[in-house]
Length: 140
Image 1 (cartoon, rainbow, N blue to C red):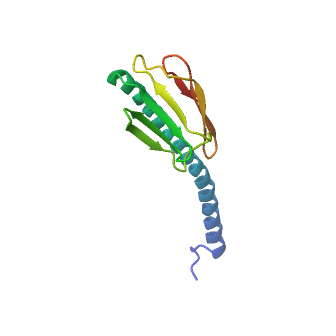
Image 2 (spheres, rainbow, N blue to C red; image 1 turned 45 degrees about the vertical axis):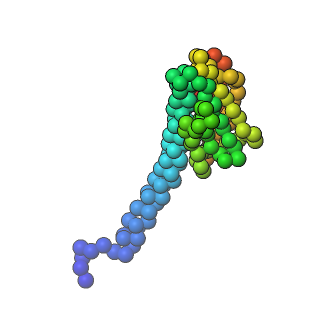
Image 3 (cartoon, helix red, strand yellow; image 1 turned 90 degrees about the vertical axis):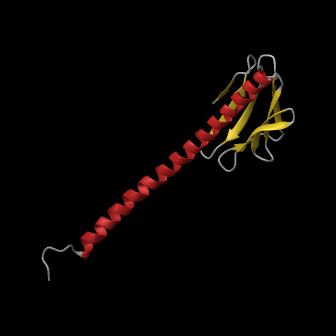
């Protein structure tokens, strides 16, 4: 019998401590990845809204953005041609029951109405708030 070897009890203790540490780090990492995915999708939607506004000004044609709850997606169009489509998938879901349409003016990029779009994520709820005046909006 070797005197420098580990006992079965010592090996089980090390393995149980290691598994406990791994378990405690995996759960917060999964929540962090989910939160980052939601924020990335919101940034993509914000960029698409800016694209629609800039397209309305540069093309001199009104651009429409739509939030479609039954398909759970965002669509920007001009001249009945799709400009960009962003599916929310399982990351975010629209809380509206009807389709919300907004139009950016070709003259100065202002939006035709003000409203709030409610989005639900895994751990947080978000609001996309459209304000009157120069097509401003923000995410809360």
